Amino acid sequence: LKDIGITIEVEEDQESFAGNARKKAIEIAEYTSQPTLADDSGLEVMALKGQPGVYSARFAGENATDEENNIKLLKMMEGIPLESRGAVFRCAIALAYPTGKVLQVMGWCYGKIGFFPSGNGGFGYDPLFIVDGLGKTFAQLTPREKNRISHRGIALNKLKELLISQEILKGKKDI
Image 1 (cartoon, rainbow, N blue to C red):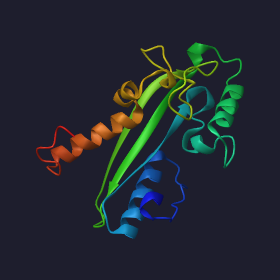
Image 2 (image 1 turned 180 degrees about the vertical axis):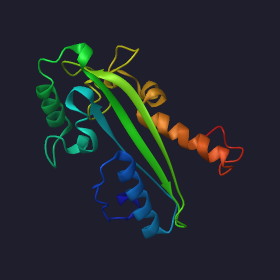
Image 3 (image 1 turned 90 degrees about the vertical axis):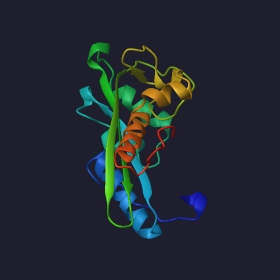
């Protein structure tokens, strides 16, 4: 938004990823009078009853770095065996139109939280998230591999299919 001169900030105060994505898309669509795509995503760890959840980006504090968030997560996971370290990355995407119409989709990717960071790619919790069935963290995947299986990639593909099915992207299956 800042790249195109929009400086308003939408407070992410909803209790779900879907709520935050919807709120951001609607407020920016109203402000710009343009269709607006917004997302909210994060990590839920089963052993931590869904934490960090909607607080993923600020898990270790309001201005926490990725490293600080990862350190806090690993500390909270101390003593938990691998088979009990299940986690899911979730992504909600909302497309809001100035008319008030909103389309919304969800994507998710299951895995486990590793015992230490591994890999140099990605951001956030990627070095800790071991993807089910791959035995690699998101940070060990190429961007192309990650985009194909990630929660955000899955949600974007669902949105594309929804737009095609509603003939909004008629004949644009190659997008």
